[in-house]
Length: 351
Image (tube, rainbow, N blue to C red):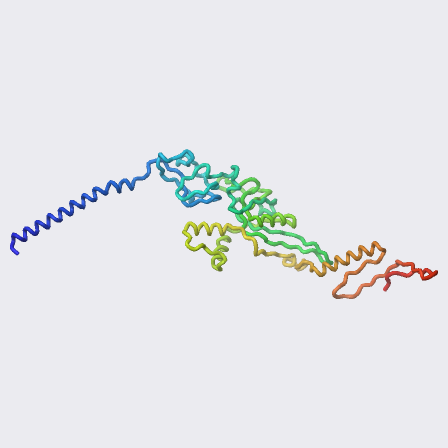
């Protein structure tokens, strides 16, 4: 190849490279305005939006909502505006209507403690609110606050229908029950950074309809007491339920759905698996078991026979015993018997 042809080839190559560079700059310049338009952020105030899906009954916490820039023309009067809304007053309120993730939170969608409908909004689906009387002794000395979880204990005395002493017993018949309110307060009082412990006379609990029936009956049977649960108990019992297969996370659930499922399971009250202690477990001088039905039936029959015998002037009957010496009675009562023209007095009873 001669020198002239080589120079022509190099010139063509330089022209091709220059054309390619020019075309590339044209394409970049045309697409740049679109990228800038897409990256523009809304120009307007910051409004309060949900960070995740908030179903009805959700208690607002610091991580459930946040302020976000919102187009000025789309801002409504019902929105919470940054700089105007007091976030401290919003914490602890309850969601009245479902709010999707990224949706602005409206003033009508939240219920504050003390407002009408707050307690109904705080209840989970299918749950009921019941109130029981307590004292400083049965209410953990006032160290129970709204939002805590407690166990319910029933203490009763079973009357003795035989010759023994009554049976004293305490059983835990409901567990992991959420406290909704103490007296008429649904919030915890804090003064100078310290939680105020105060006495209360009633406690409102969140339970299922069946549990509500059990609580009403339990109040007629004996004395109800509260046992405050540790915060670590719920997580440990939840881990155990997942490990043994009694609690299964739905397949295909997202991370948010899985967290909500776990939170609902941890807060669910437990009916079943009750434990109990009798007087015999505490003291050797107390009874351990209830009177047997057979012995109770014998005592009832004996009492009935005694009653009928006393009405007829007969000596009292003696309830049969499974072992031990026989008991005999002597009586001074007589019955007059007439045979023909002769009447004699025959003693009743004897050895």
